[in-house]
Length: 428
Image: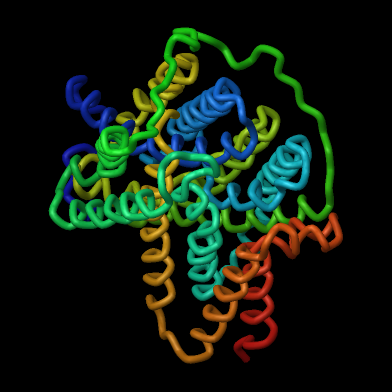
């Protein structure tokens, strides 16, 4: 019997009205993560707003499809999915490479992750993911994204909006989000990010003299993104290594998300669920690479939602997945959500990454934390931050094949923590 008192257990189906209400809550939690990561990457890749919308359409499709398959045949756990932030780091490091090389690396990374899972080798690799390594990886994801967040908050060159206005507005929004997080409860707290994006966008459009409205007339009501789809395999060894290291972090995130729900619900068949779940995550990244988008991962925020709602039914996420699939073919809706100002995306990303830092610190201090542990984590974080802020003109002086590795603060940090943890400070 579960220690947690639940209104609906894992395999129970709530009555239709409650099912739809719970599904709406999950949908409100899922959409912001797709929009945030999708908009960051789409703007990096494309100048044309139409192409940016198509990119986010693909993300909605992948997320909805994979979530549905995971719920019915994969891990079969109440877990939300979304684009992996750690793969965003790989995309940023590969900006000097073509899109074919970036998404070929994601496709291959998905294949490797799938093979490691179905062959059982992933279980052997878990011994290298010590507490300090996992904590450092979580912290690195947050800190190495700071240059991207800074670029999103600051106005582009030629903008009529001052940098000071954007900075004050962004950090005021972040502060208000923390205040709201302190006092809100239930569904209001669970959907805080989406309310912050909506209210923040409205406030910014009123206060900023240069806000631009979306031209909804230029988008079709219904449209497919499968037209004129092409995939070209392109391998760049340095970029591939960079992404494979990012996939290490992705697998840790995926594993931790499933384990947290399994422990909460006291499930006895977690090894089988984890194998199926990670295998499907790998296959999902193969499909993502083929479609040319960032691959998905299971998110670790589900336990908090289960505890607050007292509902662990996996069936409440099926309408959520179906809604994401339907929205993928409605570019007008995607364009509306994608028109959120970048300063709002940057501010919400600050809030999300603060949660990431909190998770990393909780793991770091969950066991005995000594001075050596502080040195290991401190050095790797410093390396990651310094590398992330190296100017582009300096990176351009380095060998092209090595830039995705030595110019990627996250990759350098992961290599450093593995070396320090397992070689220099290896326990006897």
